[in-house]
Structures are given as C-alpha cells and as structure tokens.
Length: 148
Image (cartoon, rainbow, N blue to C red; front, top):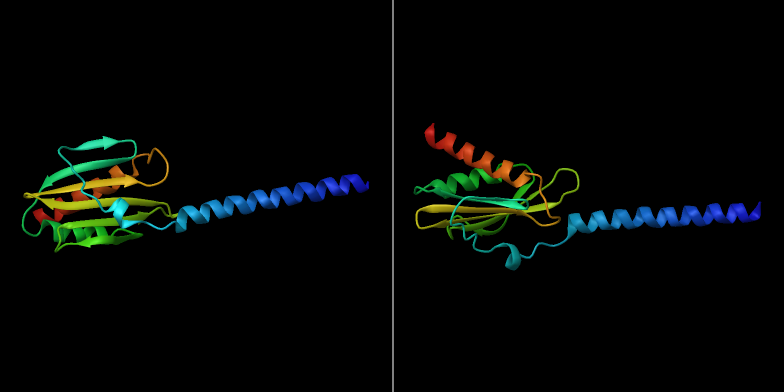
C-alpha cells in the first residue's frame, strides 16, 4: 500500500512538472522579444510569391498609398507597429494570433512607385495561409478605399 502511494505521488509530481513545462514554453512563445534588427529588413519583392511560411506582394503605389495601407494595417486586431514609419517609407508590423499570441511579421516598403509587402511567421514552418489571407485582406481593403 505504501509503495502504491509513493508511485502515485511520483506520477503526480511528474505530471505537474510536465504541465509547468508546457505553460513555460507557451509563455516564452508569447513573450519572446522581437528584435527589429532581425525583422525590420528590406522585403526585396521582385514578384508576387506565396510560400508555406508567408507571402510577398508588390503593388503600384500612388502618393498616399502607404499612408492608407498603414491605417488599414493598424486597424487589424492584435497588430502594432514594431519599427519604421510612413515618413521613412519602411515599416514592420507585428500581428499576434488570438489564442497563443504567436507573432507574424509584415514588412512594408515604398520603393520606386511600388509598395513591397513581405509577411511571414516567426515560429514553425507552415502558417496554413494566415499571412496570405491577412495581406490579401489588406490589399482588398486598400483597393476598395481607392475606388470609393
């Protein structure tokens, strides 16, 4: 009987340690600092490109297009500007997922009458289309605003 009680205590201890390790890992994913030197880089978009970890888009831009796009992006839930500004013509945003708070980074740059957008995930290898859906939503909203 005493041995069974010890085994249960040992099992409970390991179970709690496992749960705490999971919680610590999730907290690290959510709270890990974002280094602008790593993420605020030139998107270098020569052509539209879809990949499993993100999306690149290049669109024609008028004099106020970047300002309009900045307003649209900042209106996205759980999105904030990490680095850059409209005046500099180069901005990087962080958008966090709803449940785990995982960051995706979108870098936007005004270059030679075009806006280049590179949106990508930080953790994992496949974003299951999240960045593509987000960027295409922004571009559709921008097109609607320019038409209306």
